[in-house]
Length: 165
Image (cartoon, rainbow, N blue to C red):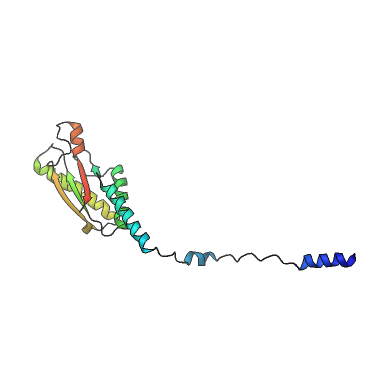
């Protein structure tokens, strides 16, 4: 009996548990490069960015207060998203068209429209978008969204329209 008990104890004591897999060094794990995307995946990602930009630019208008060319906080948020997309696609160029309502002289409204377009260009430049990728033009009061002669129409017409070059 002692022999049997001794044999059982020896077999239990001699049995070894499997060693756990060695842990990866966090420094090595962070340094390991991510696998390169396959060409088809890269093309799909470019198409997704293009679709995102097209959707973003469709109808993108930055509105202004009466006789002002400064950007609102809402406008800045929208331009932050545009700047992000433009930094992701270095070939993307835009045209910013400044507009004004019909109040004021034609010359004054052309100048105000240009100030509005330049405000967008300057803001995007501060966010890392090269100035050469942004064209500006002023239409003053020549391209209203709303032809009515009231405050609602004038509010709609005080804007920058942004589209691809």
